[in-house]
Amino acid sequence: MAKGRMSTQERDTLAGADDIKRIIGDLDDAKLLDILALRPTILDVEKSFMWLSGDSDVFGAGQPLGGVAGDIIAILTTNEEEE
Image 1 (spheres, rainbow, N blue to C red):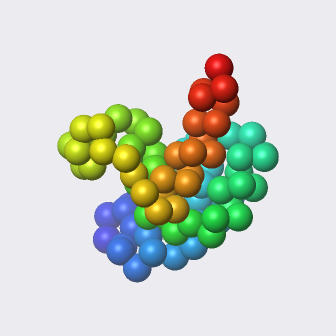
Image 2: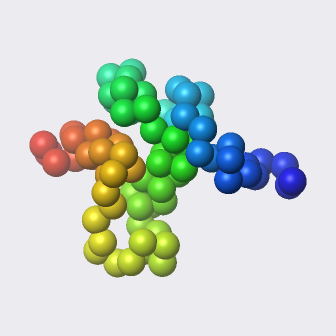
């Protein structure tokens, strides 16, 4: 396995705070705790980050992302919607 790549089994494990920060980057503690409360997998976090990055080739342009990944997006964009 190449360095930095995860197997499917590893990506299906629950994401911890370090995993979330590694994938998404810096975020405030309240959002981090809200995301952790969802009990997301590493794959859920990766999907939400790709969607937020505008990678429409993966999901289809303008397509909403559902499930836990969609909930993560809602948490991460809360302040953007208020502004």
